[in-house]
Image 1 (cartoon, rainbow, N blue to C red):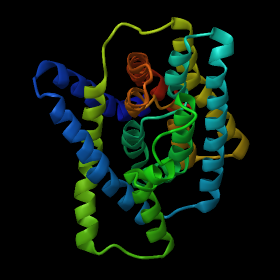
Image 2: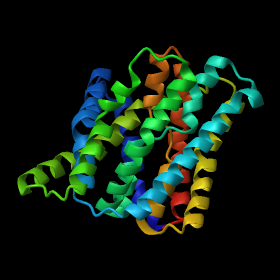
Image 3: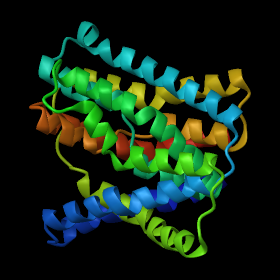
Image 4: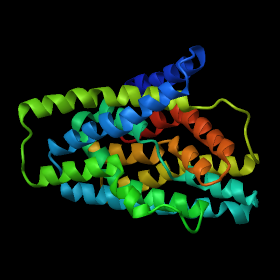
Length: 297
């Protein structure tokens, strides 16, 4: 019960964002501006500081990252089975397969911070940095065999990746942030998660289900049940405890990121179907995440 209460405020911010976007005529430009501020400024500040000032247990971290890679590849393989099992429209399968394995980092960091404080944020940041590039590669691969953009270049300019790597190198080098820089980054980072969660809520689309129900149920089952179950097995097998166990379970139980919708639209996919997945998964995760987290906290 305590775990659920600690997580509840993060989901309340998502619901508030959803209500604000529909009750007031702020316009899409307002929410897009907020998303860009979080993505390019506030979130990188949070990630860099969280990693730069934390003590990193490299042994436990290696087991966490290795487990996450294995879980991700399992989810990708199950997503690929959608076509032979359900035989959906090719464009539907190509667009929504990513919803079985991509994850919402804003929710992840908010919950990690609520449950585990700065150490949880640091582990979550390093885990995301290790998994995001692989998840993005598979998401693009499902939608098209030949991307028009330079993918390595996109990763090199990704603020999440850049700030994670920079913070990691700063930490390993044994450097110390000056007090004024630490305080400045702390102020910026403290704004990132509330603003990011409001943006997540504003991006949700309350529309009728789009596409066949069978594939949608399959992707949601893989995302919200199979991945956490696999994480539970890894935690037991490797003997993970504390922050590492909690962050791995949290990462595995996160819903799909709203950026999956943007990718599908930009690559000519079925945007409404992806929006259905993101919205349904986010709302369902408000129930499933607390339940899964109670198994490790």
